View 1: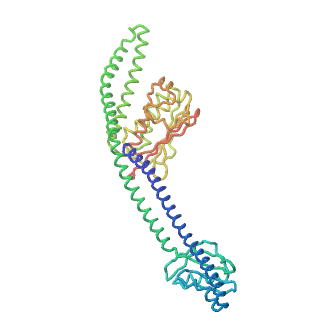
View 2 (view 1 turned 180 degrees about the vertical axis):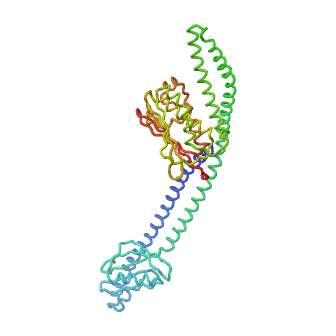
View 3 (view 1 turned 30 degrees about the vertical axis):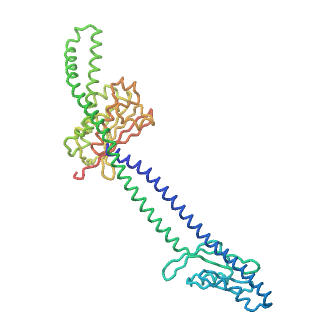
Length: 435
């Protein structure tokens, strides 16, 4: 129980920390990505501004030389000398002549030439990828137009290193986040264990107290019960009032004995001292035995108690403790008989279930359980109808013991109920593989 709580605490706080770390990591990565992309766009814009400035500068030089020499000799060569750089630029002037700057990126230069020849205007800026000798290169591409009929240009900037850097940072951040989450989870599990120590100690003290108190109460209660039985032998000699008091005392002593036995059973279960010898058990035969022993109580309450075998074939044997199984079915039948009015019906059903299990059902036509109460019915001292439970002598421990037995036997219990129509308690056991 404590280990399960410890793991749940670790999972809860680990999940919160993981979400925080992931949010921080993703935010950092997105900020870095945005910053790099902004720098890349700025680099492309700087290239475009440089193109425009150099074009304006060349125009001024041409005008000055015309005035000085009154000649346009070598004018065209002067106009395009600024393209001689390592930048990826292709320009188409107003006369439809194409000029390209020398560049080591041959494939990208060819692609720019194709766009220039087809006059395909790219969305500026946009990314474009090419494979250069088996290596993927990424470029940021832009287009623009020079002033005063200077022509249209296509340019590209290599951003491969930025993409590679982002990829490496992404992997590093992912690995770092995973390591931090693992370390935090380990530390969380360790400190959760430390935090559970006082809880375990307090719980163990409670279990010890319940066990000791139950043991100490059993002896005086046995003495009182024996004394009441002796008084009953001379009951006729007592006045009516004393006889009435004796009956009430007898009922209360019986209720206290049942309560102490239930508390002792739960305390043993908490201390994991219950269980006993595990053996192969024929659930059908055990159900027949328990139903037979409960028939007088059912007849006394005017209730029909039935045992239903849905198949003539022998049920698979289950692995369990016969005493625990007997107690489990007795609790479920006692609970069903208590809350089924006279004229009602309680049915015990044994059947095989797929893939390899045996089902035990206790179905009644009683008052039923409200839907909102179902999650709490196995809690200790919990009673749906407290007034009726006191009237019937219930302490709210029977179903808690039943659930504890089911857990000890590694079975599963499921409850369906409809208020005013009845309830069905189903326990599914794993069939013994040796049967």
